[in-house]
Image 1 (cartoon, helix red, strand yellow):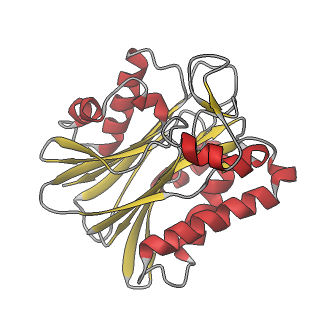
Image 2 (tube, rainbow, N blue to C red):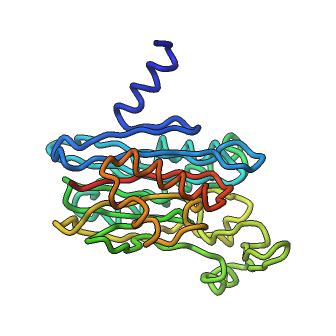
Amino acid sequence: MSGKEIVHKMMEKVGISSPRGDVGKGKSKMSKHVTHGFHLLEGKSTHPMEDYVFAQFKQVNDKEVGLFAIFDGHLSRDIPEYLRSHLFNNILNEPDFWTATENAIRRAYRITDTMILDKAKDLGKGGSTAVTAILINCQKLVVANVGDSRAVICKNGVAKQLSVDHEPEKERETIENRGGFVTRFPGDVPRVDGQLAVARAFGDKSLKEHLSSEPDVAVEIIDDETEFIVLASDGIWKVMSNQEAVNCIRNIKDAKSAAKALNEEAVSRKSTDDISCVVVRFG
């Protein structure tokens, strides 16, 4: 086995992907019935792959956290990679993470964005969306997001969206109050200042005065009705509804196979964007 293959196997074992066309899986030590799998596919655009995935179970003192995320870059590979390396560390290092988790996540998102803006000279232009999910002791799920990557939970076969799609048209008033504008020119997609098709993101220093990095945060309790959650970039959601995505993989018990099948279904529906997906199954 080559050195590259050994590194890939080690990364897959702990649940961390490399950036291009990869699959991987992992499982909880607290509950053998909770597993995750991920899959990435490079799109047909001319730029290099800009999606990154994080998926890992981690012991923190006497607790276990499942850490899952999709980072979808725009005009940047360095910023989503930076997020993958730093965001969860910032969240877990918040002193009130265990007692006021939602506030800690919001604060860590803001701190991470400030870190990215301070390093703009090194990280370059552009930015990244993010959707993160933290599973605490296999019982409590906390989802946060900026941008249009999405988290969906399936309970008894019914899809429920846990994140918020931050679309410029929906946040036009806020953007205009900050001195920006929303236009469909050029093209037919609403964009902040005619440039960015999401209303919230990390980075994007040139647009930051008109662009928010404040996440929406949601909490969901994992119960006996919970089957799985899906985190995915907009390469899936452009061609599939939440319920269609759930229906596509509900009967696939292996989480890695489910993530791969969902991405391949998006491609069969003519999605040309980079596509990344994490599936977490609950027994």
